[in-house]
Length: 246
Image 1 (cartoon, rainbow, N blue to C red):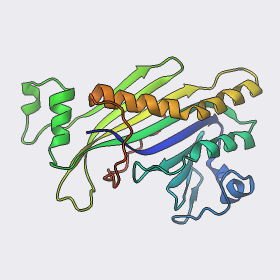
Image 2 (image 1 turned 90 degrees about the horizontal axis):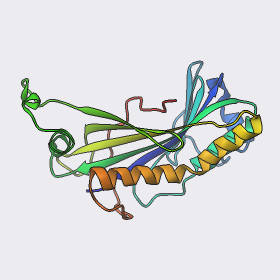
Image 3 (image 1 turned 60 degrees about the vertical axis):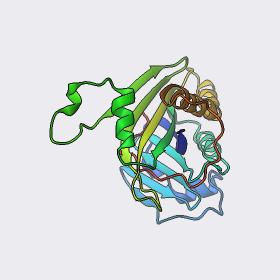
């Protein structure tokens, strides 16, 4: 039983940033996104949001005051991680934006393929104290946990949820979804210092993800954080609006 990373996203918050900035021409001709990338589906654009999805599992989403670069992983034989480079290029191309913070957001799954009840048991028997409060009503109680950790340079917000698996070739299954949000402020008064601060935090994305993996594997699951080579990771339901909090 070990955490499998399903998605990592990088969110950049900037005051006054409009979703209309996220146009295919801007991304392509500014050399932010490689010109040979293909759309998975037709891009969506609106005044209050935009989303572009590519066939390689990368998505770029914009909302007022923020833009998110996300990359999904179907197996633990992970492809080259690219959204850090894309996010850094985006910042370089918009040096005058009023940047406020950076979010590094890993999302992982702990699957229980043998039973659709194991994830529930993990939450209620391992993470929560037993008691008669669990027995009220005609069906088992449901739980979603929200934890917050104060780190040296920012905060980690952690959401823990139970889910049913969309696992192929499995009659039933359940999972616990761990969604992390490392929120880091942009430091400095001068524009150059703020740009350096945001690019440095993007470059250190892997440190945040490693902290996330160690927290879940060693403290929640109580296993060593060894490299996994499992293929065919079950797909959990998409998160419900779990995005960066600044």
